[in-house]
Structures are given as structure tokens and as C-alpha cells.
Length: 68
Image 1 (cartoon, rainbow, N blue to C red):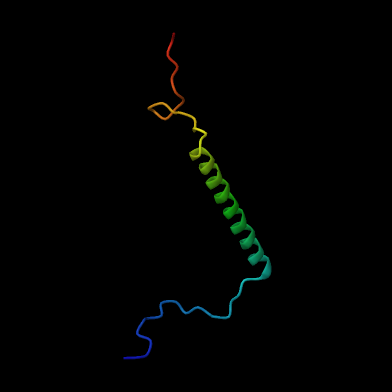
Image 2 (image 1 turned 30 degrees about the vertical axis):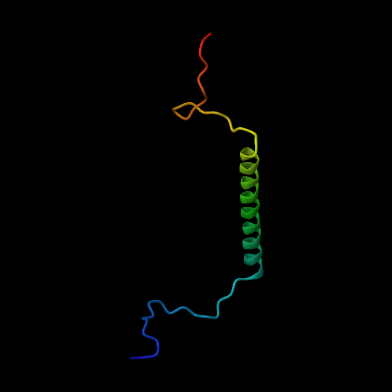
């Protein structure tokens, strides 16, 4: 048996690299995603700590008002 028992399905060159502009775009995207996650977590934390979220009716819409 050979040293590498796994088949090579696609021969990919190992010399490719991302250019600096592509790396920067990726970093900016990751930073925006992390900020959005933090903002969502912050909102959920505030809601859980006292402020009640808007109530919804049984069908998921706005709560119904009963006639007085």
C-alpha cells in the first residue's frame, strides 16, 4: 500500500493565493456579520431583561382587540 491511501479526485495547484483586495472584502464582510450578530444578541438580552416583546395573536399576526 502506498503512503497516501486516499485517492486524489481533483488535482489542484497549491500555488494560488487570494489578492489583498479579496482578503479585505472578506474581512469587511466578516466584521459586518459579527456586528449584526452582536446587535441581535444585544436586542435579545434587553428583551429578556425586562422589556416585553410585542404580543402576537394565535395566527402570528397582531393581537385582536375585543369590542367593549
